[in-house]
Length: 171
Image (cartoon, rainbow, N blue to C red; front, side, top):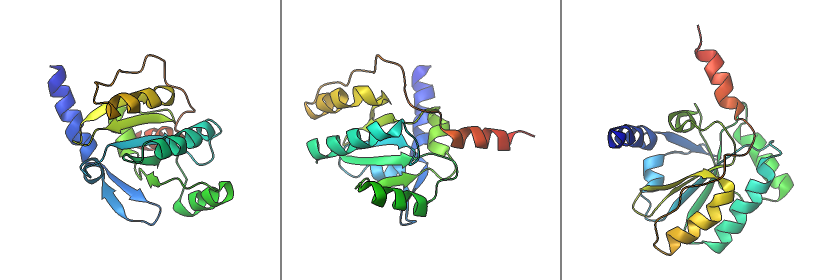
């Protein structure tokens, strides 16, 4: 029965469309099937909890250049101009995508910023969890070992985008 749920979620996840800072739309399926491992981290440009996530993602992108690393801005009200201005002020070279309707976060039940998601080069999800476990997961992936699931709880601030959408969906 678990495999049936995973099959459903897998299709719903890959159907999600994300948007780059330049407005270009890309499906998660395209990103996953790019031939490189993919790392997404939910992130918000004005979140204090995300400061450590920014640094971690940048550090890991230098350590693992063979992996595609992106921040996924999931905060309600953020727009590309605000995020670009923030990145310039902070002098960050962080590739950012938007989840315009919160689809990916909703399907996966992500309600906390700095949630990390990792797909291997074949497009299979290998890690879903906290940022603290991401470095070890990437090392295991690079070495060709199975990736251990996270053992510590999620951390970060609540993603207000989803709370806002939940209120909008109510009658």
